[in-house]
Image (cartoon, rainbow, N blue to C red; front, side):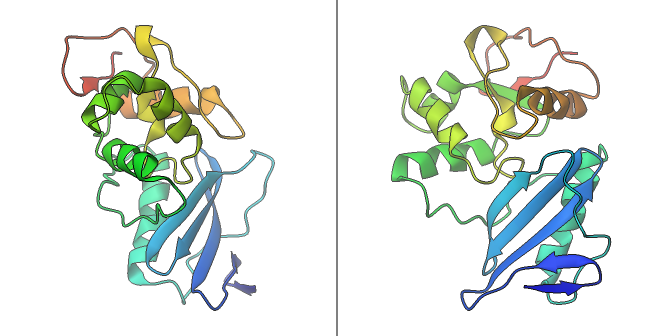
Length: 192
């Protein structure tokens, strides 16, 4: 582990890197295995990340992702659909669900059942919920955009729980949401 420019960087022989950063939504930790993003975690609000500037040994792509995360948290529309991710910890089914979830556009939501259908597994809504709970890269694989049938917010795995999920949905909608479902489509605009 090294500390450089106030950033804690953990590295080992497998080229693992981990950076903690403060965002306007709270502290987070971002980790890579090689060039692929392997983890993103919202940290408890009381955590005090050490990062104030980018470390020199991160690649340009990794530095850009950190800036994109900070910009997203500040309310700037960012598309994370093309971020290379390491999904090797999941089953083939989970990987298919996470890949489909990563394509849900900013500001839109789907139900667990709709995501199952989009991933080619209609009727697997509960299994989608399980896959979402095992998602190690929330925000980049935007499980906050997946809601329960009947317009219920559903669960969210973070120290702040569903209050952070609601905050992310409100941020993307440009204001408070009420989760009334509009007309049928693959993706739904979030209602204000």
